[in-house]
Image (cartoon, rainbow, N blue to C red; front, side, top):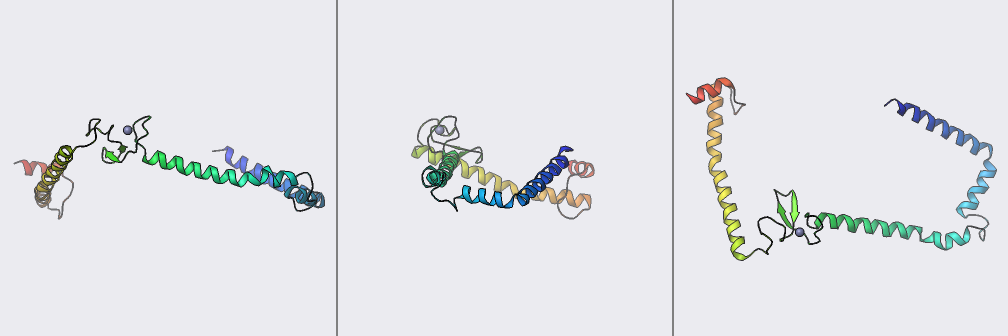
Length: 167
Ligand SMILES: [Zn+2]
């Protein structure tokens, strides 16, 4: 926390010092810059570098970017089980994991069969129906509590509301 102003001041001082040196030796530095960016003395010592190995530097950057993209795609789509290289397109734990059929707990290491698909679908529909059936009851319960408390709309249950609701 305290070192941050010191670092900032140091950087500012270094920048000012660099600028002063640059202005004092403007001609010398200008020549140095021309040689090192290859705008003067073309067949000089750096010509071979920039027309040879140096011209490939951007390609290394592009190859690196492509490799990073491929790596991220693999990390996104491959199975989350350690050291598994299959495509993980079966979500588990409410989408927290993407797993292949071999590592998904519902499939028990086998490819999902017609029977398993139909059973899991039926169970899912039953769960949804049960949740939907309970919703109106929950709403009425909250409305009743709010009415007892004298507060319009569903509010947080208080000790008064709990007592009157139980009796
Ligand atoms: Zn897997």
